[in-house]
Length: 540
Image (cartoon, rainbow, N blue to C red; front, side):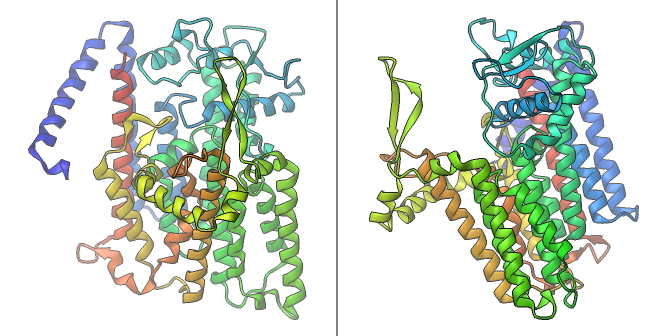
């Protein structure tokens, strides 16, 4: 690997020397604040990592408590260091949260032309003057360079400087409003406190991070197996970036993790305990919250079949059938209620859709996509295209699941290859090496979990094939590694082996393996975050 070559270490030394000279050049200038920001970021990372290591080794905290502190603190630094609205599609989700905030405050949501209304102060975010082009509505964070940090410093957090209202030309994603409730509450609170545009966008981000951390902690607490798997995946740089953004992927991941934990708890934790109506109502609520947000993840509810029918008590079959019918009805009903148009887009029989750009004559362009009739006529076509996709983009999927490129696929904000390998290797190790006190998964349950993982992956691929891929393209467009994060624990926990408990202790039994690996992942997060900050600062 490149990291073992002498040139790697030479480049590292040159980079560190250049970084020192770069920050030294800021002293005495208007950009001197960047030196202080970097110092604060470095100190915060050292303090957080030191505190977490102390909690692992000395404190008597449980794993879900350490998870909460770790994910919230490191996620907060990712949220602050990666500029607002820089995450994938974040501006669309910010607009959706802002529209919901208008509703919560009893204010008009849109103007006469259908544009979402915002504060005049917040136009700074969606029509950033830093692009020096009054005719172009540039989103803050769309292009990451030093000027974005300068804009954040200039605006500050606490005082709005402009009055009145404006609009944004950005249109929100059509999804359940529940996905934006927490960030919308953050935006609403910022508006009531008259915070600046930067303060507003960061407070909304923080609320999403808080939701992810809370549900993630509950998942780690409740699941009877694979606690470290949820922890490790939550420490992926991509996960932390999404968790501290407006993206509804944060909401989806949090609910998916908790759903899997609930199902594993009901299926494995208490063999003789019966399923109560409280448990059924909990699963029903999760169906209402998760299914309409991104329809494909409703497939996760097939994992409910891991729960034995006998756990429904005396005469279980009528109760079981009623529970299945209720949850199924809520899944289908919520999808139809919220996402009918989106559903029709995926089952587009003709394969013809409008493209966002116009032709040279000013007419609406149309693109012929792969369609259902084509797939039904050639039943092996979809499998050939998926094979091509995995052959061409499989490595990219593995990389982007962890966070090979952060921001909007910014090739400069990278997680280095050695870190990607260590993230995957550490997570797989934690997945396989179980605890002897944990319940054992039967072969049938393992097979079912793997089948659900494969089915969901197939549904994901087919949906992107039908909705985004032109008919003349022989591999699927639009699939990103982050789409696998919500259900990645399903596959990894299926590999769990409790008989490998003897490998959980290393260094003559003095240190637990999961402590070393999770601590290493946090150190790598710190390294990635510092690299990203320095990269943005270098760009002029």
